[in-house]
Image (cartoon, rainbow, N blue to C red):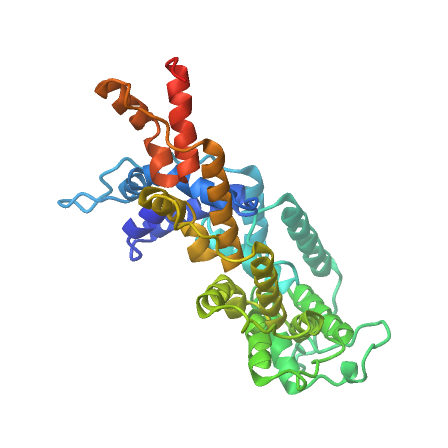
Length: 407
């Protein structure tokens, strides 16, 4: 994927569509996968010997002939049309969402139309063409047809058709302001329902308005963030910025409430000053994503977890008594944990590699082998030598010797 991305010409729509299709296929199969603790480092080591080959293979999918500018590598086989996708495209087009030709193939137009429909109807905006989505689209179309089939009186020539108005939900209001929506909230509701207003019938638009009003009424209004620090308030707003921009005020207020509850449950930012400067930097680095994209509660919880992991690790183990080769191999095996995880995870990795080295019995003696046999044994364990700790490498050598009849 990295190799293909580097070769995509962003000015050529067909290239962009093909790459997005690759991403969609990957996400549909692997998007929810989570590694078990310690397995990610092993997977990275397994892939590393083939990295250049894989990246070259990705680039070749978008390589172009210097003379013609056309794709020099054969284009991948056109995916087979999907009946569900095709039906969804038809329904979206009928509702005015402009999904493009109903060819059964996912593309940018289809995904954008799905996202617009999901946002307009208060659904999780994931852009996925599922059977449940098709059912909702079918029901929406049926509602619109029923609305169109109702007998109507011709309007008086002098009276213009009135636009949909804000109608409070039929159930009892849950907050005082439910019948008095502020101008900011009105604008947010209109923005959330803009696609329904532009591309759907009045019934769908009115339904969207009523849904957003109901969500606003049940949200309890905008929560008071004044007890949080300015930094915490900014982090909460940042975490909910997408809801503020693309959803109604009820969804936005609910997001603020969730982040505020998470902050209150976190007991505040933990004190990490007891850690060394390098350990503090590693903890902050491990929680950088939470700090940038999540609310302060999630960030503080990440800091607390990393601090607890550090405390449980008993500090960085001493590897100075091992040979230079063994020290370098241990550090190399734990380099990913050092770069992307907190100090506790890194120290635990070092401890595991030391334990593996001790249990291996050290480097086996290959001096009695012929040079060709010795080279073959080393070659069989080359991947372990480069990407694993010394204990794994020594165990590999012993296995190869055992297979040759040596002890």
